[in-house]
Structure formats: C-alpha cells, structure tokens
Amino acid sequence: MSSLDSAKIQRYILTFGYGNRKDYQLFLYYIQMFDVKCVVDVRISPRAWSRKWYKEQLQSLCVSKNVKYLSKTALGNTSGKENWIPPNQEEADAAIQEIAKLSRQENILLLCAEINPLQCHRKDVADRLGKIVSLPIKHLE
Image 1 (cartoon, helix red, strand yellow):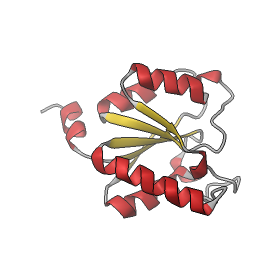
Image 2 (tube, helix red, strand yellow):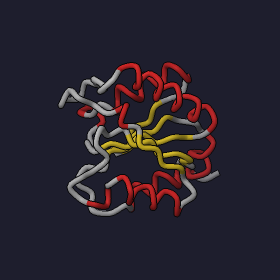
Image 3 (cartoon, one colour):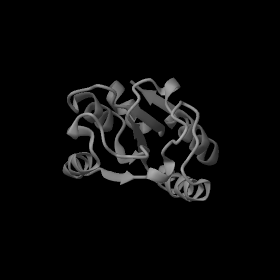
C-alpha cells in the first residue's frame, strides 16, 4: 500500500495556511493526498494579498476538483493574534457544530492565511472541532 493510499484511509481534521504562496500546487496536493471533500475557509475576511486566495477564486477551484468550499466568517478571528476570539460567539458555536457534522462524514480542511499553525487561530478552531468529533488534527505546511 502506498503512502497516498494509507493517507486516504485515515480520517483527520486538516488545517492549511497559504501564507505567501503564489500558486495552488501544495494546496491541491494535500486535497488529493488526504481525500479532502470540503475546504472550510475560516478567515474573517476571505481576501488576500493575491486574488488567487480570494473566496471566489477558491470556490471555483474547489468546485473544479469536486470539493465543497465553505466560507465561515463566523470562525474568523478578531484578536489580531493567534488566540481565537470570534466576531460573535453564538454564530461561531453554530458554525463549529455544522463543521463537526461534516467532519464526521468526510475529511475537511480548515484554510487560513497564516502559514504557521502555531501562529494562527485555526489551531484553536481545529482543537475545538477535534474535541467534539474525536478526530486527530493534522496541520499541513
């Protein structure tokens, strides 16, 4: 069995930060390698320095690969730091529950801008999801 096959068997909550990447090569590699069925954008504002990482472009890319794309601004961060302070806790709680249901059925990937997961709020979002659904978390870089 190849490493690609073994990765597809294991279920994860995956996270990925695009950082200053100029193309989708690594992002698409991870989607295929881990058989991701849904990308959940956890940015408070789904825009970037490069239009490639704007919500509309990501949504088109994901659809072209038969992957769902969800923008969950309720899971965004208002702290300006790595600790997660959502814009509205009640909306964040509802979004977490929605994403938890999805992650029980398929591999999801939480997407944010910060390349280092230890400096990004997506780590806190993933930890909260992981506790709800009892899935391991894998931070992809």
